[in-house]
Length: 295
Image 1 (spheres, helix red, strand yellow):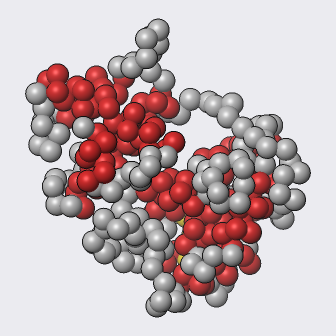
Image 2 (cartoon, one colour):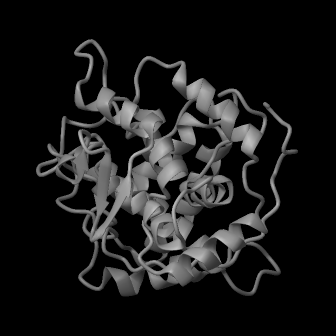
């Protein structure tokens, strides 16, 4: 059932990719629980968040006693993506998972993409005519934007003349490459199509017209778009990159100027201690490919 619905909504490709299979696996517990409880997912009950507790936390593998927070968040993200697609098709009025609180991510020892690997990706993205993927990549890597901050970024927070970008009360300087790609986005080529707008989309969501990435309708789509833009075959053997690890790699690789307060603001931090701790943690992480790859 998840596969059929996902194909009808253009949420998976043919043949299925590794990411598609993971997406469907994360959806399956909800469909199984819906069948067991005779629940119509197109008309979720009023206590839907309470109902979700079972499919979110039930192990699917024998011998596994507990589902980790990262798996719970991945399942919630998959369901949110499904409802976002259903809403765009007019099959549901709202996304009931949009405001579902996420669990605190578990500390992961997953290796970060190497500096050389990211340079290869940057060169590959820079060769493309459309600038959207490069802009999203650079905002995360050069300035430490989170997926949420990318989704919420609006043009009134960007000053291309002063080369600054504002996140709440924190103002950061725009490096030349980030400013350049944002300038391309601000003065788009009319012959280009915004690739963040999926074929299933119906133009821009209301109140997204001033967004830097108006084609993104849910924060989860930031992760999806980056994953697709940096996947296998995009110039590196390391595979796709997710925002959280790209951000950590940016902290690891950043050559920042000024005192510690200025450096922290450049990555969106107001708390100097938190910035220093995050950077030292990022520098202590291993790379998934040798540092010389792509250099």
